[in-house]
Image (tube, rainbow, N blue to C red; front, side, top):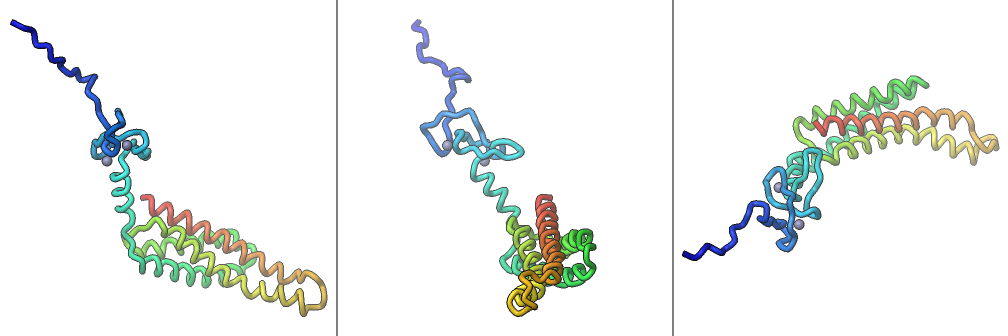
Length: 189
Ligand SMILES: [Zn+2]
Ligand SMILES: [Zn+2]
């Protein structure tokens, strides 16, 4: 009786290769689909290593907004920010308190208008609209400032115009950043 000489592969010796790179041995696996992946193919996520395909699939789920949703969000944000800004900046230093509130309202309105549709571009678009709406308010004092420089009483800096520019600028900064962070917070849920 001759002993069986063919080596039985031990479980430890079982070699696994990356699904995308057949020449690369690996011990990593995608924690969603279980596909073996090498270090280069692995994508680190908050819930572990995943393959590129599973990560892309996950991102697709969040990209449910249509192009017109983004247009609506931008127009809404611009209009609301201009109206809100006109009211808020008339109240002087109250801007510091009211501008973030206006930002929250704008984010909430856009969120409702979008219903369940999401997009990772939305925070940028909404914040951009809010900034544009607010900047429209800066246009008039800005013109007054420039006009003061050239046709004013000759003083180089028209202090009154500069003061009138402060609150709209503060409004733009506070309102747009609030919209951005609120939309991001909503998007992550
Ligand atoms: Zn996978
Ligand atoms: Zn690979």
